[in-house]
Length: 324
Image (tube, rainbow, N blue to C red; front, side):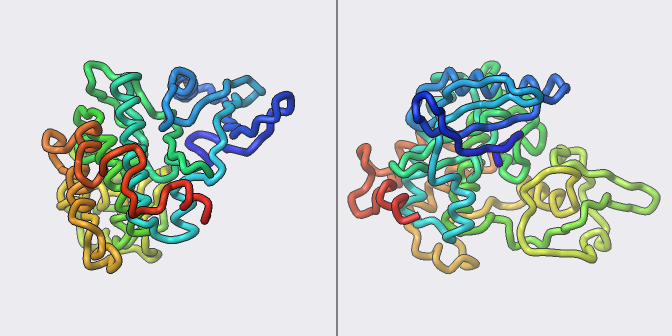
């Protein structure tokens, strides 16, 4: 499944080309149609080794079918959930290629991705890493976007607060993604999470929470009784609908608390990661976007290495992909 539709592997019979076909239901809502058209426009216009290419699209009522490059190893979301934590050397190479995609989108196309997360980063047998799903990407206006879309748990603090944001918001999402892949779990997964989608009941006042509710409109504190549920689980629900208290607490945490770190005692194997890697992720996760490093400057940091092939002491992405 991809954002807004299902994805399947298909063959174009006249040419024998294997493709990924994304099927999106044509919704009557103008906002959904606009998302589909935006995704088609961006995919057609892009020409980058770090962006999934498009073969075209066609109508098949009541759906629109988008034919894309097939990435046979799938998303990094499914990969790490199958094999566990991704080796830090592979995470480094992934970061370099994702940054290449962000630089291209920002400097050449004038757009933000706005939905960077493991499920939107794909891998193929050649070891190529590419970004997909531009359904929530938006053209920039003076390099600053104002709308409030995307996956809330990967959002930067400024987006959660409803402030203007720039490409540095994608950088925050990349930092969260890198920690998730290297640790083998979502960075905030130690929180207790409610499974039930119930509104908060505060006396006679009931607040129906959306996962996209700006933090500025939320109560600054909550009665302790509201912090417990009859059904709890470990981990974070990454999907939408009406948010639960756990999403509220998570968004509060993102805005109010220190950001997660790559090296942490709660993840023992992370203690072996280099200081260079930790510094790189820390620069992605500066709470103040003015202090956060932009994509091009991140590519110049020491953890990114020198040269196209990266560091000689690491397994190549292609060799690693062959093990999956």
